[in-house]
Image 1 (tube, rainbow, N blue to C red):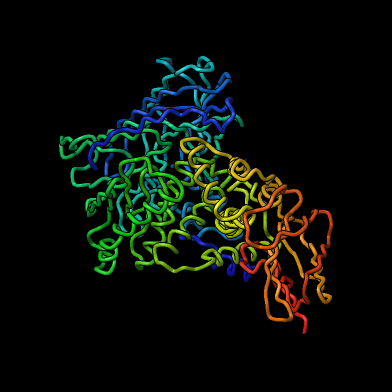
Image 2: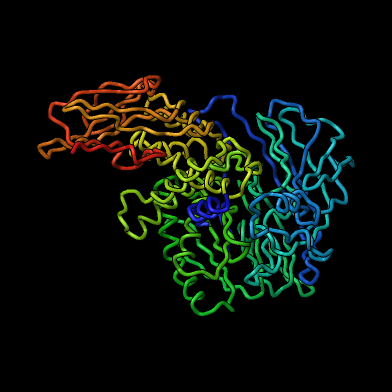
Length: 600
């Protein structure tokens, strides 16, 4: 077991400020969406006073919530993420009891002292001016409303709260391993999302987030020597008073607000032609090697921004920030926090991955607590292609290592289906292989099924239809079906909802008759390469009957293969020497050793 997990871990790809015009897109259903689509909306106004000496802050929050649902809401819930960083929390206990705890957490939470823990304490909460009852339950605030919120109604919640920034352990915190003073993600009382599946008030146990689309107006008061960067457009110069500065940020049409601050940040910028202003924040006391790397980073970050905008959809904001902070790499609204003491290849790679998350999970805001593979996997797919293009590697299958990671998982006996909640994986490393590797293979292999050009069109259409919304897993498949007019529910069901595997074999060659066998339960169309005795070759394509169509191909198209039939035979016009199933290796066959057969 230990050997498997170590091997699997090595395969998982954890690659791992002026005012601007606000975004004014209306959140309306596209013509390709059903007219019943709706999503909630929230506007935050916050005033935060940070004490950098004791790492505590006081907050006032005015929250205007619009109930766009057809439902009457009797309760609301807030996330209080910082409460996870206390001995005895669910995150602490889970880390102490899971068989392969994250080394970033391990037993560290259990050892925190009172001045090192994190907390958010709600002191008062009013609904439309009337005090209401609430209870803090771990990382969730349960709120009983004084009056139900009717469909279409706007409600104002006013909250006073106190908080303390925990020692940096996971994602957020103070004084990280590289000495960054404040990495402030998931730091405020954050309203939970409500959708057609109900409330999503998940406790913060291991990873991933989900939020309500809206606008943020944040005034942050902090020591005057601190340089601040993150989400939102700075409104003019900070005002100064009593040794502090107040920074005023507006962030339109986002579902999160993150910031980082340090007195020793260098702040570089790069204005992209016809694109956003790129910001880079990193500590001036880094070793020269790392300082040089951060100076090299802006130009290639701009190239990555262009790649994603061209291949997924145009980046819609006027700025993006790459900030040294956090505990590795994590995406947020208009920014990412990444650790900065890296070789240049690692620094660029993690920037590529986190920047790609701007599209997959931030703009295409799937619920990553439930569908983690949609953000980690799709991001791994597109960032791998971006790095391949940036370095001009011309690798015909840049995702080969990702396929290997998934196939190792599928053959391990420890795989859980992609429908597994992100906190419910038996092993952290199985989560990683599923979310990053299998999620990426889901998209790459869809290109094998429908054709790469059709996949490219699908991704762009998916972005056009679902950006600034909350797409669900089947939305990507329905988009592909609209592009191709194929039936593709079988692909989604088998690959995302089960642990069924693909295993096809060349069963026999008899002169000019080839017999193939389906061993695994998952069906697929088949690309087949045939070499004849005379040395010539021919490519064949065997459509899958239940797909009701054929991908664009220059291969010879032969009769359909019905899934329930375990074998398939056909006759060629010449004597056959050898046969190979899927020479491209873009089909995730879990036993490639039986994919070829040669007659001696």
